Image (cartoon, rainbow, N blue to C red):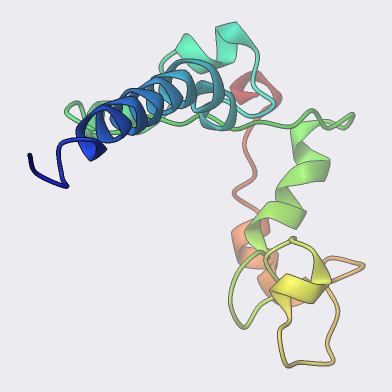
Length: 123
């Protein structure tokens, strides 16, 4: 009789539990962050540029609701990024090792980009 023989049922039980946990994650948990904040209509409608990657392995649609017209939101969007006004994340994450905080206003230096604001019908 081998010492390994009693381990076989325990390994099978562990593998079954891991498989069940993975299945639950993929079916119940994983879909939620892939459409974080988006309605069912937003998550299923075609998005600009979506036709460029038809064979994408992962499709994620994240959204927030902003109670403002596109013309007021656009200036904040175009100033996002590295060496600009920040990423609009938590300052503790966004500015690691830097005393700078996220912008509290828009910058006139981005006026050229700002002039290309989307129309209200694009929202």
